Length: 300
Length: 298
Image 1 (cartoon, helix red, strand yellow):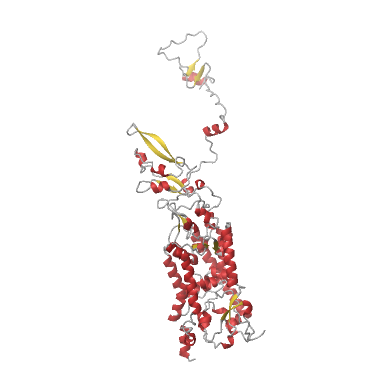
Image 2: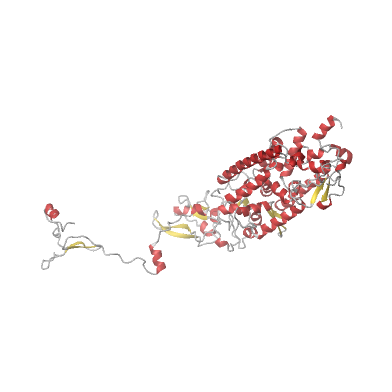
């Protein structure tokens, strides 16, 4: 029987075995390379409209942790979450939601996090207000009707962290000259990214959208210090007084910044110019430009 | 047996068993297997379809009656390899499943639970009926290389790359969470099995099968050919067995003193060999109780 002969391990079958092993290894290496390329390209990039559930680890870690079991989907009482299917842009089998369709209702007990067995939804998240699923951005100022001077404030009113995540800023309506704009302003310090504002936006295409944090949030250079904030923190100005500016003027003159400007000091005994007289003070410069150049000192 | 009936038997293995023992006895384990596959799927489906939540989740991880966590040990291993920390429920669930299949024969999962099995079986049934021969020559050890690659890929990328394409979990997920394009994956698997070779996916490529084969290496429940003295070499068991290479030693190794127990972890305990054998050569037996009728002592 050929298969029992294979078990005896003669020279030919050993060669066959090595050949098989090499071919298998090569094939698998190729397949792995293809899978890594596939994984690295489209399959791991989350489209901007897809929001992860509350407590989700940063995307890269999330893809290493999520078992794709769908228990979070099942325990969400509002059917917010769904699992990515074949042909969708989200990594196959991972949970996400689209704010414009069904936003997160921000349950107090966060059932999706509680049921997750893998830790892909961080069990450390105990207060839903601390969730950061994304960041709402009033992305289209042109379409948002608050910018037309019309009253809306729907996003402000539906916000579960009302008055903190979205506030209204009053601005003068210069078109009418007598009305105000009520401009919604999102604060990243409090926005959970639940998406209720995007869902509720009255426009056909929402002007306010929840975007992934890394897409929505800018970052100030680390070296930046805002003077007024530093001053507030320190309780006093953190830079010294301005050094008095030195104007390298010829003798007999000085300059008053935010004052009279260039002042020609009167030699003692000389009559002061009459107040209100149009007569300009004598020029400090000699009439002959060559004289000035040659004088060395006294040049400007 | 005449030449023509032998050829016919190759296309329709088990015909003799049906004639001699009746249709039911010649299909017993097959039907039980389909019943098992179907009822496990229905247990999962009862929630989304009828709101009866017995099992939530899917084959990757689940929660039965909001109490019993179960999870696929290979997926949890991938998470560990990716450098993430599964919570107690995932680890506990993986432990329970691993222990269960270690005792029962790891690839019991393949034959009795996995949703790819019916597709693979259907394709191979059709292959047999059409008398298709040939196909790609792929070593059956490729699955172990793939298994290693699955873990290495997770470790290197930090992501569960295999789960992007793993059809075993994708099929169940699609059935339970909305279907998407999954029909294409099922169709592709069917065609793969049909044209590229017998049991190409399950018997050569699937790393989950390889994992469960290793897990069930020393399982307690086995198929044994301890009545091999009755064998008339009709080869029907070879024709239906998804891992025919594991049959030769137990069935034909009597003169060499090889044991009748099918010792390989590759055996999926599907019981088809028991079904199709008209001579009742095979039976399920506990590992320690398989030498009741040893033909030869070593």
